[in-house]
Image 1: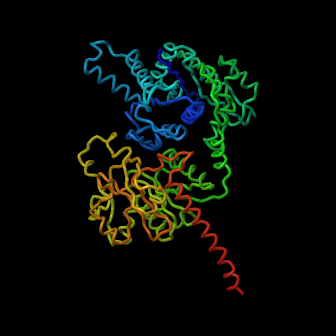
Image 2: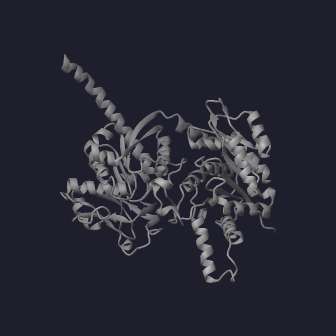
Image 3: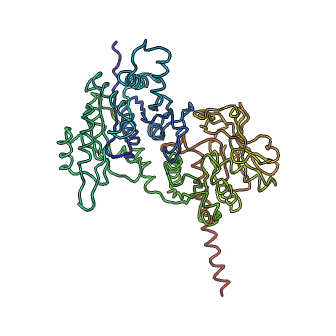
Length: 556
């Protein structure tokens, strides 16, 4: 029996960056999976860093951590959310990884003294990485590869050369090139402009790649005439010019490109038979996201609030949780440094819930601790993630245990009460890259806790990314003051979840629950946090309605 031929789809980008190649690639993968195909998806990042783990969030955005502990690009989050599958380190490859592998082989003499060059050694390594994911978890039908960067960037050239070679190696009916470009609307001219797309496709052709499908990111639908013009100058049929118009939520994109016929074009090009499939459930999810009955205001107190991509998974987790609660979650980005200057009342008084996300470094920490204390005093639903859980522990120790200088060893070397301390195994580490506590770990929940009620089970697994932890030396003093430890790792006895019982909803977790939330199933903790925020809002409204007649009576 002949071996099944894997089909390849390569997604490139042109004109400008940040057009949404990751979401487009994830949407294509989603549709093909709905057609009954086994799909694997991969991102190639052209930077020389081995992974994004040591990169500043202001430059790179969120680091998305996989089950196996790999630190990856935030687009891997889109892949997992759309496909509802767990990916591995093989799904995100950087230039740094490719060159490190080739250089190590050269040092060992694997190339038998040959001159090591970009072509063929670097390009062969890239091709091997692409083919490798076709054999993970059984043979796949389609591999989708997103090439990071923009056509014309020097850094992307080895990847583009590698996929050009795969096109030659496997032939037209087994390889499909999709090029995502920008078709801007010029207000002063009152029309869309196709010239940037023409030049981008031309640059791609000069490299040796002819786009088969052109996906046009644009603020308004493209007319038949515009599609014909793009097709004519870019050497594709007008039906292969697909409009990717701006939408209200990214979860509309699969519906939009399906209506444009993109998935049908892919199946025809790759000679894959049609399969019956439906999108009814997905349409219902989109409808719930776009037309909720309720609204809550959530304050996010962090230090990367000027760059929302640093909290991409948190944003999406709130979209999912909002949909399950029929609620629009209005996020208010609050700099913890501003809270340090002005106090929490100014920023948090109108919030229905407060979340402190993960992060690193001392800047803005006292503002986060003030936000926790305010949430405790005003009984506002509170959710602390990673560093947020650590700030909650510090705030509790200072407020209820008379440990006035309680702090984290990360922020203070002079504190006599480091209620958060460096993990024991971290004290010997000198190399920073990929050396934190990373990936999935088990947690056992205390029965009848808020966490246990949310998950509906006693044992869970969540993803981590941290160096510091709850200092177990302070367990007794904190729990005697009312602090509750409701989740513990059974192997290491590390504290994973904390709660404060004299409060409507107060939960801190050492892990990152946002990384496992899906549009088809919101993460339990985000779902319950939004529900608690909605209840808090309704109680506040009820109390205002009750007090209004009393004010009128007092005036009389």
